[in-house]
Image (cartoon, rainbow, N blue to C red):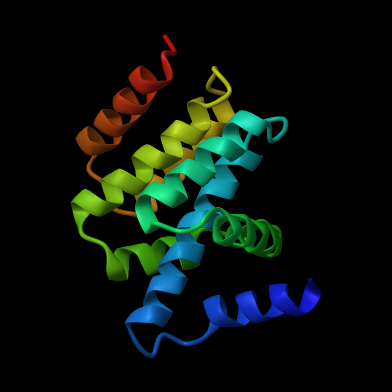
Length: 153
């Protein structure tokens, strides 16, 4: 298992030398931000994890075992990281505004997955949105779409 995890980590951490490497870095950056939103409240519950997995599946068309390994790596990477800038910079280099709004909507879906929005989750979301240079209107639109989809009022 450790060898597999190391190989996966190496593939995500490798310098971007092509489309596949860039895609792996984009996947890891997105997964780390999803993990950070999950970690923002008192605990990670199953609904948040399932929502994060669904977001990764939808965004990157990964198999369940790939998503599980990616989330494991992202959890480890998030624990070792001291800020979000490295991950948001990858998204800024790779994605257009519409794609970044979609990622932020996925993050909101994770924040709302447990049926409530904690103040610290909202703080993390604002920080990430600022680092992604998201216009406030797009930030609010993504938030409202995720809230409505979760059925939270």
